[in-house]
Image (tube, rainbow, N blue to C red; front, side, top):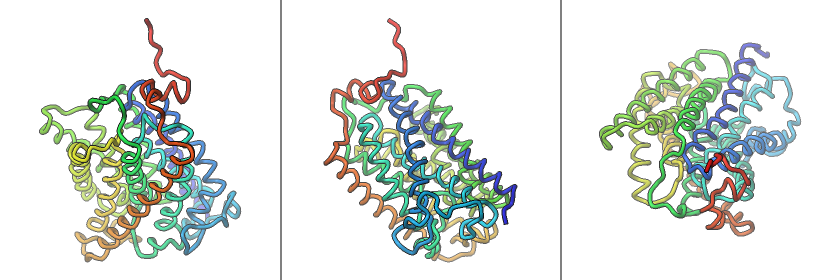
Length: 409
């Protein structure tokens, strides 16, 4: 039976998650050099349009139509059979189409996150093909395995409340693969500073704001689990932002605005898989761990292996998503959510932790392999990277014939 309060809540949360993609555009756009800011904004907004259409035509069906197979199949293509009545396997109190559009916003932002790895050097036409193929052959099957009716990882007991595996692990691993294959940016003697920190700050604020819809909305009802997810989201972000600033202060002598914002996003990504399964105190611990581990990934591992993950999509989202998914096996508690499990620290045994590790391992291997194949396929037929002179001029002019800033002589 449809509950009006739950329906309004989920629709509002869907709108919040939609706002995260423009927020991501500003967050990423402020970090790149000024000659590439419009290209990043275009990639994010184009993904919002392209994947909204893909989701309605066949993406939702592949991800959520009931099936024990590789993905859901085409039974719900074009929203056939997806009406106003609830589909009890997902929610018994909201219209099926409300669940569909809420999940659409997850499908949009996930490939958009990958933009941070290859920013400033991928052809726009190749970006379109890559995004469409990746959403179809990586996001859709993984989404079905973890969240879909009949998904095999779901049946094994893998817990992912709001996308630690489905969103952040897949996007982060894809980011690492594409960053390594496409190669480093040209004409870079050092990693450039963000060209517009106020853009980054506004984007961070919009992302944190939207993340309440991302995590609390995944309860799919206006209930206590949603309240808990709202609180854990806030606390993990706060703890990670504070601890990142302190780490930076100790290591570099000064805390930076860019550092604290990076920490906030790391905390948000890391708490996502456990937001509705862990307590607020556990969320503080997760946020602290997020900043430490992601800081190591960004400040130590990335320079050590010398790959150019432009905007640290892997270092923040990939590492955060993997860490957070594993933390569910430690910090989850049935006292928070009876539909979850007891982690190792709350009366459980090692079983849930092993299940979480299995889920992460499978998705990492599949995502890495499938992303490599998709990239190589596009590179053979279209070519992925812009020409060297186009990269030097900037993607704003060479891909879109626009300039973000008017230069006054």
